[in-house]
Length: 195
Ligand code: AMP
Image 1 (tube, rainbow, N blue to C red):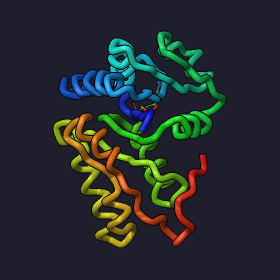
Image 2 (image 1 turned 135 degrees about the vertical axis):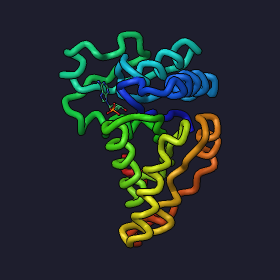
Image 3 (image 1 turned 90 degrees about the vertical axis):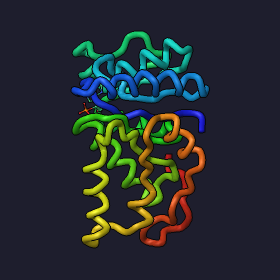
């Protein structure tokens, strides 16, 4: 694993533990020699992860659509900022550049991003790990909702169980390294890296 994509809030949230974990995450990613790939913003937890990784000497790559850059919410001190044309292109580029997808607490943007990568993973479009840093139980209800998908017949255990829930970023990164993907849904031929 050379790079990790962090999805997280463009706000800091109300619990100070969220910001603390974001700083720890950025620092650890840099210390482990991983490239941080993220949405490129300077606000909220996103900005905190990037700042911490840069402060620890890490490499940080942001990917942002041109209209968000124009609104001046882009981080200006990154190792590299990819300016793309659309949100779809952005998510594709972030996915392409990353070896795993990890959520810190966040809002709708964070949920949308990880659900997309989970879906691509279970269809076998990639074999990269997806998971959550469950700071103070922030993702407990989501985990229950996802379990309900299996209980009510809209998913099955391998695809529910492939998601990693970790107490902190250190545990998440260890488990990402040990990750084994499930067989792809629909009996497609073995996972082929599509991007
Ligand atoms: P949210 O969780 O709704 O705050 O959205 C944060 C997630 O969506 C991040 O992981 C980003 O990739 C993306 N995102 C949302 N808003 C922004 C923004 N202002 N700047 C950069 N990325 C953003």
